[in-house]
Amino acid sequence: MIDWNATVAAVWRQRKEYLRPISYIDPIQLNDLLGIDAQKQQIIQNTERFTAGLPANNVLLWGARGTGKSSLIKALLNAYKGNNLRMIEVDKQDLVYLPEIVDDIRELPQRFIIFCDDLSFEEGDSQYKSLKSVLEGSIELPPDNVLVYATSNRRHLMPEHMRDNLDSRLVDGEVHYSDTVEEKISLSDRFGLRLGFYPQNSQAYLEIIDNLFPDFPRGRANLHKAALDFAHQNASKSGRTAKQFYNATSDGKLD
Image (cartoon, rainbow, N blue to C red; front, top):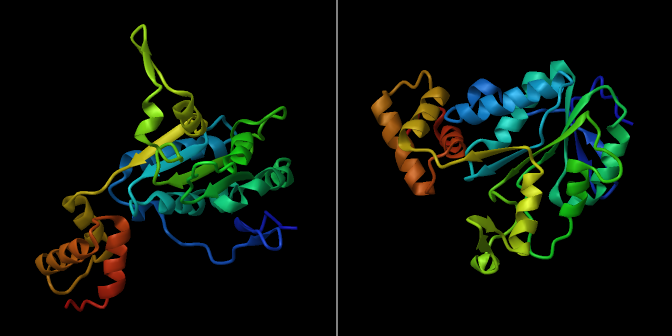
């Protein structure tokens, strides 16, 4: 049994069907995340309402890879763990255990975020049904001390095909989606706050680089050229790419 007064985060382990306390938390801070100020402000406001015991929304962070979605959620834990915020990470394949996990924490005084990273579902995948019941409840209301924060590359969490729209129609000037489209949209609609993350431009990417290299000894021009070359090589200008560049060159040596 976890002592949530001493433990701030845990991860569900399927094989042994138990929550394992996390000893070494990613130390990332909200101030470390650049270029996503609008998204950051909205999720901070939602999280502060939640930790204050006020009504708050489940959150879906969707969009381009490497743009800070997962890092933002982890930074929230570091910012608000002193406000009784706790976090439980659950992989997609373990969502069937979500109702049991929630049952064990619903009466506790702490405020829990269920963190589902890189969440998406394929055609015929029924695992999302367990997630639906936690997001909005069934006969039993969802607990007020639990929210779900999920990240995904897909806006609606499920694959979208052109053929899905063939049965959509226009009635009295309003679009009526096909049953297939409605089913796919209905899952993401259960997240009251949906935040989009988009590919960053060169300026935003270089701002992240400058933040990572405040005392670079060989001049900004050399640093920026090397960082942009690295981004072109990896076909991505993102916070993740900037951190990878830092890992490769933080000793100040450029090839």
